[in-house]
Every structure is written in C-alpha cells, then in structure tokens.
Length: 173
Image 1 (tube, rainbow, N blue to C red):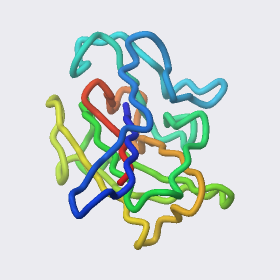
Image 2: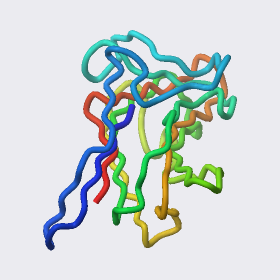
Image 3: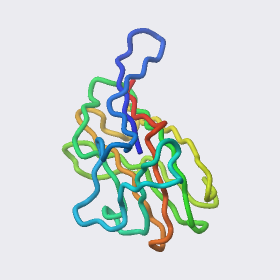
Image 4: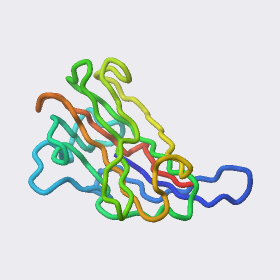
C-alpha cells in the first residue's frame, strides 16, 4: 500500500529517495496488521491496481481496520516525507472515510495526515492516485523515527477500501 523514499537536499533541486517500497505480490513487505484483526488483510483481488495482491481494510474497528509499518523508519535527516499510493474504494457510502496517519517515536500517538471521504474526495469503483507531503516544519515530528498507517472508518464489513503499493512510495527529501 505504501512506499517510502528518502533523499538529502544536495542542491536547490529536489531529490527524493525511496525508504521502503511494497507491492504485496510476495507477502506483507514492510507492513503488518494487528494480531487477530478480521477487518484488514492481504488479498488476491481483481481490484489490485497492478499485479494480483493488495491490502483490504474495512469496517470501523480502529487498529483492527488498519495496515501499518511494522518497524520504525528513520526520518530525522530529511526535510519532508511524501506518501504516494493507489487506492480503490468499494461499497463505501457517502460520508464514510479512511485515513492516512503518522506516528512519531517516542510519542506513540497516531496523527491524522489526510482524511479521504466518500462522496467528497472519491467515488467508488475507480483507482485513485494520492500523494501527500508531510513537512518537518509543520505539526509532524520528524526528529527521529516514524511509521505510516492506513485506517478505514466505514460502517459495515462489506464497505472496504483497497490500498495498493504497486505504484506508491514513501519518500523523504
């Protein structure tokens, strides 16, 4: 569902470097789901943007409706973090949403980076590319290590958001 890139500033020109990249074709990659979670899973699906596998998150079960980095990634040497990913929503009613979230170590609190609302930010049954930049100058603590999480907040188990990393990246500048 997600790629990470990292790059120091060499000149006035932006240079992004990939930290992690996952397409989920051969497994979980850098992501995990909560032990026992029933509302998040790696699935083989015709909805995948590229390849055959993706993560499906559904319902509104908090951490059990999420996928997240399974280890901390160093972000302290960079200016910005860019998260780029493809997603596909299926059967989400207007007003239902999902979130891109950020967690800095050692605080442990997840912060909402971007909220995606059905009927406002996206429509069902189409692949959508999203790219979000988190600035170190802003409210996100980039002084150490961090994780990224995708969390669904739909009303039913049949409402799902499929996330893909086949064309996605987390990058640092």
